[in-house]
Image 1 (cartoon, helix red, strand yellow):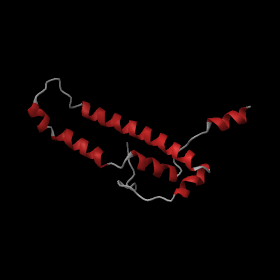
Image 2 (cartoon, rainbow, N blue to C red; image 1 turned 90 degrees about the horizontal axis):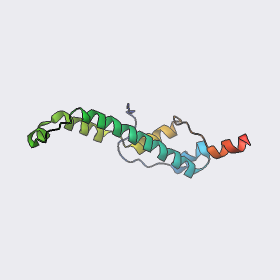
Image 3 (tube, helix red, strand yellow; image 1 turned 60 degrees about the vertical axis):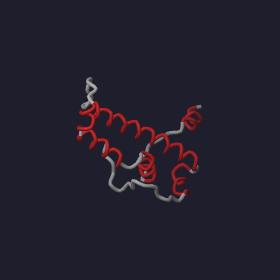
Length: 110
């Protein structure tokens, strides 16, 4: 997964009114951001597990665990990435998240 360089890795103070521009409701916006953060988190975890699976061995040798530098570097890379919540917030504020409200679709279809 490609992560934008502009996303801060740490916590940033946000103006809560910025989240209401698109939906008109802070809580709807936060629900959308939360669902997107979960999607990002699952995707990152799958990528990490896929890369670490290459190093999986059936032999439990304690020396190999400490000598596997490539596995450690991959893990450190994923630890340095911005948190999924920060990525989701940036995507939402930039208008990159597409969502739909099922309740509104039911009203329009009736």
